[in-house]
Image 1 (cartoon, rainbow, N blue to C red):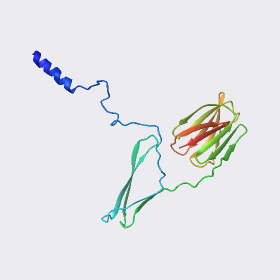
Image 2: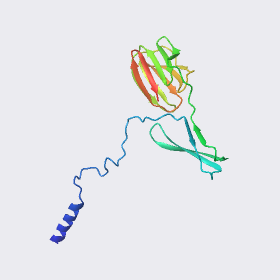
Image 3: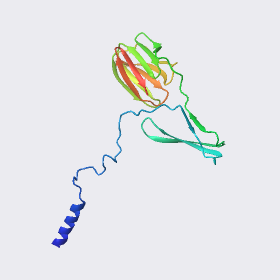
Image 4: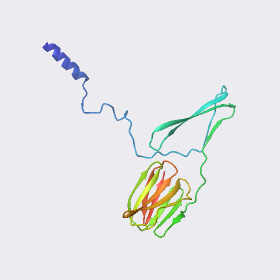
Length: 200
């Protein structure tokens, strides 16, 4: 009995790990997430050639990555005749270039809004208390100390990705809501009395 116990102990010592507290999955095989942005080029034009046996294009499946990093697929049924001699083309039409200077959109006595490409600049002497994003629809909320002494107002006439700007009074502060046309992230920068929101 003593011999069997020693044999089992010896066997388990052979298969034991050197460090019992080390991770079972190595760092090399474990997926690592990062906040380092990927450097990707813009999609402009891609072409695909089908084999000479192709006659009908049944379905197109596009796999894309969302803002949160998740990957999904979009499938479209076509059932269209094709000529395999001609390539299939995927083209992404860009929005026309916007000038490099800010254009004034809203100008009130206590606050001014200007836009340029995917940036909106807010100029005010009032202190920013907080800022955050809400969804459905996606919108950036900014609370400023003080009172605007105006009734709630909504302003349109913006270019994408901005839809409209709303102002409203609250107890001890007023709120600015910048509504967007889709799902985005934003970055806030402060420069003198300007607050710049960059959408990406």
